Image 1: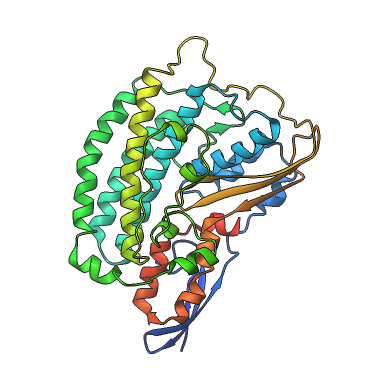
Image 2: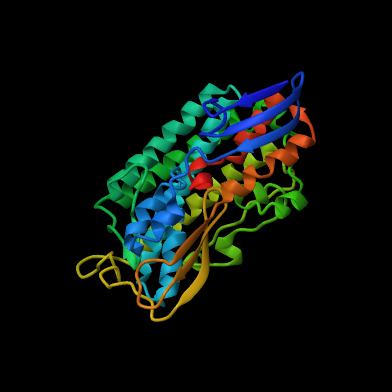
Length: 371
């Protein structure tokens, strides 16, 4: 039979339509239909100045918009020749915001994946802790979801009073809480039976389809742009790049747990340096160079990317001399690369329930797929 899954199916993680050819409950083929969330992002960008584009970037990966903002701003600053000219405090503020957003995104991925497989308690516990993070980000940026925080040449706000104390208090609590969630899900016999050996993505396939982020690292390659193509102040920070060779649904979930732990390490280092080495105070302007009119001095075409919560999110920026509006802006979406693997994976054969587990383990966000 032919089964239409979506675009309102609760396990599709967005407005996605998948057509499945089934023999009983055995999946033989899958056809992915996208485009339900298309918003003409790249066309809009050709009519907006660089600062005006940032809120549109937020709406691509709306679960973790700050890494996308960072990638876009890196592209513009490279085109303007501002790379490496910002105060170190601004760079650490950016990294701190991005890593907190990464933790919140992975908690959503783990929580929604748990409920996909019927583990309601895991969903509630993950969202409980994510709520603390969203409240902290709201106190800092004024927004819970779409931030418009990382600006060309700077950031919108410095840290509010008492923010680092509240953050350190949360991290002390979260260290214990994350271990509880790990024992509830990763070490759960039922969860492991549903995910181990399911949806295996060989490293060769992951590379062929342009996979990145946790999906690629779960297939055995320790590829993280923060390490292999360092940017901002990541070379000054100590953290590991978690990877494993299982390539299945359980391993992808495990990698996200490990990345949360590494992001917590980065967060603590950022707090320490913001409090000691790169203090703000009177005279510090978090907007940095944002007051300048951003116009490049020559025609430029370049590509800049950052390590997002789902993988490599990048922008091809083409801009003409003395113009502050892109002639072309092309976005590179990790979720699109991961979705493109579904037809090939489905041909290997799997149960319908396992296809749901596979799709959930990819952690796609349709806003960045359709753009």
